[in-house]
Length: 158
Image (cartoon, rainbow, N blue to C red; front, side, top):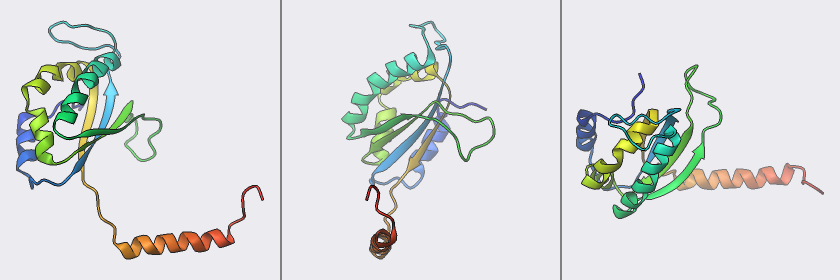
């Protein structure tokens, strides 16, 4: 079943789950409607155009809580995913903490623009991620293996 916005219960559960002040990156998987669906009427156009209106308004709100848009790209091919699942776009957004993200989505300014997101999307996923520190010894071993491999690899163009 397509999901565009989280329920209030899900947001409350998210806020209770190990709240902390460590940085997070939210992975956004987005599928656009062919035509925007504004329940009470609206500017119309494509789903992508409605989502673009949302994007232009949300970026300053992300900055306001100390966040940053890291990357946006067109989803091209799903290598591992259920048959028939497809996404149009993927976005990665950094927040300094889970609290900062919650502060943004609970703000009046965010609530005022959310209708563009709802009108533009037919389905979405929003996944919180946190960087995992790799042990220094593992990183050093990987660098060493790459150096050794380069000794035996044919040189390109030479």
